[in-house]
Length: 280
Ligand SMILES: [Zn+2]
Image (cartoon, rainbow, N blue to C red):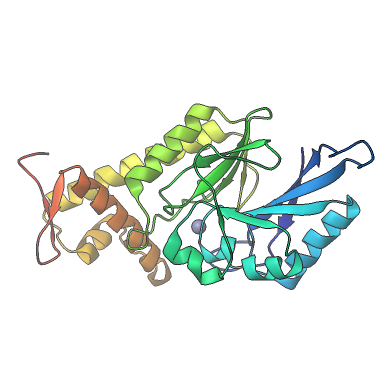
């Protein structure tokens, strides 16, 4: 299998230099002897429909005389999915596949072919791995022969991944997903943002350690009597820049919800958080 990284041409404050999409080429067996084997391609993530992205995909397909079989969407965040209508218009015969998140998927008016954990894609070369946490529908694609994982938004070098507590994020699920990927022992990750990750084990262990530290901080801040989300934020992130506050709120809330689900803290009717002394 051949992998071509194609930029989505969408740089910005939330996407860094912009998303990477990946075009994968695989040979499909000829249907009959007279029929020539032809290169087939799968695109991982739809980008945002930027004309330069469409042009780059078209050029890479042309260069290999390949046809686009399918578009595999890793999750329904706009930088991964919103290019779907433009791609469908240009390649109407392609199949659009993702793990369902019905209320989000419906926005794109595409007949989605549903993916499930373990489903084979890209001509049978990749396995779908459901990795919820950053989003409920988040998947990675695993090549067991090359030990390579197309990891979408699971981890990003040099930063952390937002777990949006109010919009489908789930920190407990995210930590399980990190552990599941660690157990695969991947050799290399191809993420949707930032550079290729050549030392996945080290990076994933750093992520797990970072979350464990943050959880301990939040628990101790709640135990010492900080009750509102804002008070907790100010105690955990002193001097936080205003533009980072929204993301930090989401992340702190994701930690609080995880601790609540474990019975270590509780949320009062007035939305204040309390340390659960009986259980902790
Ligand atoms: Zn995302």
